[in-house]
Image (cartoon, rainbow over all chains, first blue to last red):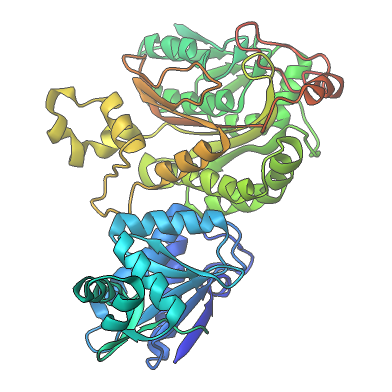
Length: 183
Length: 326
């Protein structure tokens, strides 16, 4: 199941209904707690789209607390079923903040731009980026199929896809790899 | 006995060093008179630094220091309109007439001198200024609208340094005016300052041992400003200053931090500042200045400034223009 979360709405509920800005670390912690509470109430959710469209200012501290810490805690808490996060509605400055905090933690995330195009933010290798773009372009595939598309050795394609799956940037169903679904 | 600490005629981040020298030289047992009677203009950095001095002197002596109001009536009115006296009254014993000013839409003061103590204050500051800043940055400075979101980020991160690290409250002020000789363009200047523990003491528990005898204010500023080091071991911490630098780099801005006996700066091509100064006179806490210049020289704008705010007093060495001396 896919859940779409309006981050500004969580900010209003968690901190103050009049705030449009995701600033300060304490605000970030409150917003992250609000998102985590929502996810605990909906344990069947596997894909979470965080919508930043209505957020005006996002500072580095808040980006770290909301996005990076959410991913770190997800990694620590998911023993049985993975949760996949996407971000949407970022402007260029928001994307810069999130990209930087993710890199510092060695994390990555799929971002859907306002026009609908997707890109990766955070720490990814060139092989991962190319494999991710190839999979996004052709749809679900096995490592052999992607290797054929990219004219790569199968072992390289599989390694890149496994790394993408490890970072929750693609889904894996047995031997097939799938791009994250749209909300 | 009363020790005298003079406020320069044009009081900004450069002339601040004379002020800091007098501040450091004031004998510990003597009450201090901060003499601003001859001051003709102060930058936002000057205002928040004065408040830091007031707080530090009051803590040092257990009694409020004295402060003389600028003798020039128009200058005193300008100081009042910046919100300086509202904060200063709690820190200084003020001598001279503090003008009573009515709230009005200021053309140059984007954010009055505003206290920052807790995270909620940062929200208020960003919330208050964001719409006006957007108009100033795009219409007056000619920056891309994308710059305005980063402005709120920079302001927030600069203020959060106080909340997270200073161990006391501080102040922020934001003004827009023209640096006539220094740059020949309009600028928006953010000044954030506190009289707290400073970068050296904040980072000492995690960094001092690695530097040994070389540890000091300059090394602490380099660690925080250049390398993004924080007192927390979490790699997600210490990114605020880096975020400001990234944003300023994109828009040709400048940033400097003075803390203790050192000062570090990110120097854009249009400025001749030095990246790092050590061995300065001791001044408590941390004082941050962020400068965002207009996209390109705009001579017509500079000319208009004179008609908006006569007489435009120009500082001899820097060309800083008093925004509205009359």
